[in-house]
Length: 341
Ligand code: KG4
Ligand code: ZN
Image: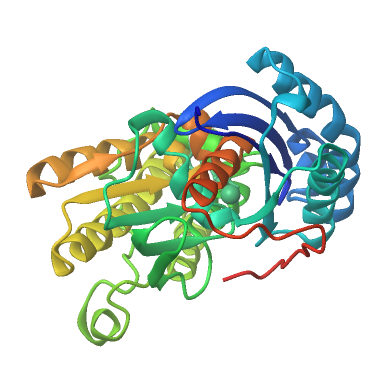
């Protein structure tokens, strides 16, 4: 018998993603985003996101099936993001997943959004070598993970102690007058700047801080340093070289992320590093990770950008791994956990 077809549903933040996966093959997917509706608020508004999911979920189910040339009846199992994420947003995806599972009498699995980000990579590069060190950098999370088994055994080595990397991008963007979501805009701006123009601080990378927080991250000091630097220029009546600031800021973020991720690989004797999450779209981070991993003899796995940001394919991919291991389904009593670790 061929491998089961798993339907994946993602609705933890502002993206409504639905996809069908068989094993590590993406059969079809569909994605709707409410990002434009949040622009005027400068950040994701939970109620707006929930309403947008409600409107998008059925069209995305239809579109993902059409993209795969299949119907819902072809689905063997249903996987959905159960957390972490915005409570109301998660409920829309989980409710839709329950409806499909119940109507078709298929097993239902709740998956962890963060593990799903890591698992997205299997769709581009095949099964994850285990153990792997995974660096997850998104708008809500910055985690360094030791993945012994993507479905059952993921250990957090470290995390941000304040802002997530994506959050820092979004906040610095606001200071520079760049529209929300700041990350992609700042990235484009940085291509015209000099990343060595300003030396911004690298949090938790030296002395006692490093000893105590070897695999943890801190970006709030960096953000404050950028704000101060910009304010001082303005106070002195000088132009703010926005592209240089953007490039130098991204350089500091990429430096810390790659340094700590490679240190984690060396410490644990692991030669594979997987990077995922929305910030992985950043061109400076990608380039620096490639260069440093090549020098360190580490095999770097970064999926295509579309699979780095929130999507349904990563949820279906993790669902397929869960199903393949014969783990028990959650059943229709599945709840959501907005702060799932
Ligand atoms: O993983 P994701 O799509 O959603 C969350 O689960 O958070 O990540 C979104 C974050 C946002 O903060 C966004 O500004 C950032 O990823 N981001 C980027 C880039 N593209 C998205 N940050 C830096 N450079 C980019 N090119
Ligand atoms: Zn995410």
